[in-house]
Length: 430
Ligand code: KE4
Image (cartoon, rainbow, N blue to C red; front, side, top):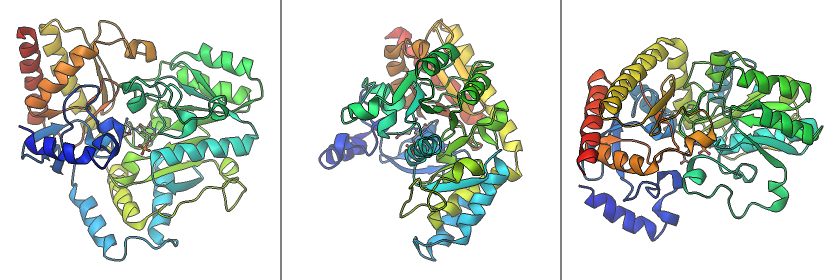
């Protein structure tokens, strides 16, 4: 069934660490060989053996309009013909900055970078430069990319690989990262009290998406906002995943809480390598060349990538109805999965915020790191492979979110529900 993927993986392991360019793609937490894909169209991926799958990874978030969405493909083709990069300013970068500002609240200045990691690394440097303080607070199970300051009880790949902190991160760096518990304001309050006037920033995924999907508890984001105000610290919303995903204006708009710095990635690039960080003029005024906090990049604001991202964002901005459609699709899928799991007495809990979902095999609510990491991972492995065999591609880890796109049709959702039914029945008989 996957002989070409297996052959490609054997080749890949000889030249690329672990055979993958990002650990999240490995099947280490579910077992087996990563599937190598050759093409995607809409909600369907085709692997190197010609097998089709309904895709719920969506490149980990960017594919909100589905794979190879024609306007994005056309924009990339058009811009690439005028050179793929200048290393000088271009009009499309200005268009992109103005477009993002028109979509999200309280961003006066925004800087493009090449990944979500670059965006979050830069955001904490800006917060430290602006406040003159060194310490940051992050949350256990939240993932902000592979910057040294974040690989401390990180979520996503690091958590899945069971390495809550990574070798190579120095003592000096680690001491400035304090770890609180998501949805537990008391843990944040305590850190502020024990590190008075030392905390530059709190960085949070406003909807945790890297320990499965966990929405903020009522009052949690508002509580972070007031703690940062009380202690003159910067509140950073890492919206690399939630930006333009949970609302055209992101989580800030959905929850009505304004951060001081916001990071973006994934959807902002339409599948091309783009990240960004932005915020109010006074905070962003410290960013070079206006201010002393250095940040730069050869391919930042790359015109081809800008064209892809701007084309996608313009669609989402002009047609917010897509978000109602995505919500309906999510409800349809969740109702079907809930029915299947209940009929087969499978303990489960499903969270969702718009079109990002968290499917957990557990008999309890999942609202924090502890509950997310005490789910039935063995059952998830069987479920993952069963769904793969039935032509449904899920994230290969229980610590990831599933993503829907506008391209997922009702019949594809029903096929997914049927695949789940057959999978859990097979598991029960095995
Ligand atoms: P990148 O550097 O991978 O573009 O973005 C890092 C990042 C930052 N913040 C949040 C909230 C993120 O979710 C991410 C990246 N997400 C993972 C998937 N959960 C990326 C997948 C991967 O590492 O291959």
